[in-house]
Length: 159
Image 1 (cartoon, rainbow, N blue to C red):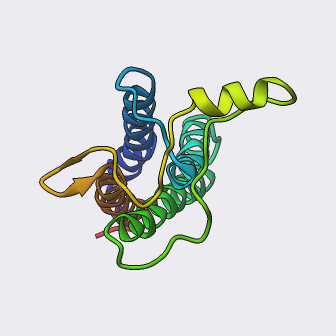
Image 2: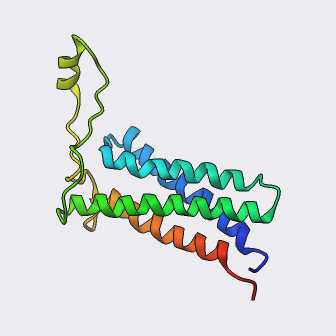
Image 3: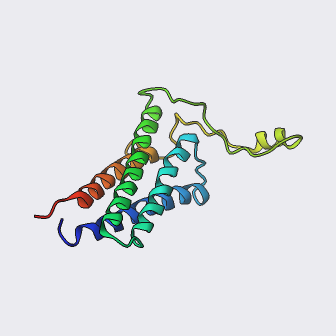
């Protein structure tokens, strides 16, 4: 491995999921796009990747740093693969595995009022797209590509 490959892999493994999560949260809280259940599924591996990549900056040995970066890349890849699945559901290439989620958090007498106020979020209909690519599709593209780059950099042999 060249001397600068692992540090570059660490930065990509940290900044890529941070950027994608910032975009997801921004589209939710600033753009008013409510996430469906599968949108949330794509976020969890990114959260794990952020933690693993951040820990790699504090690991004492190069082998531990490399392992943490590889695990972060696998988290990013997992999110991308979930994004492929979600995009396939949106394009109606296959069925989703669950009913769409909602953002409902109420009990008792407030339940009906909460139901009426909540938006319906369907997993099989993209809320936003550019050139026919939804947010799930963009997550798949960026996450899979980024994960493969990180894995290549983190596992490259010395030349």
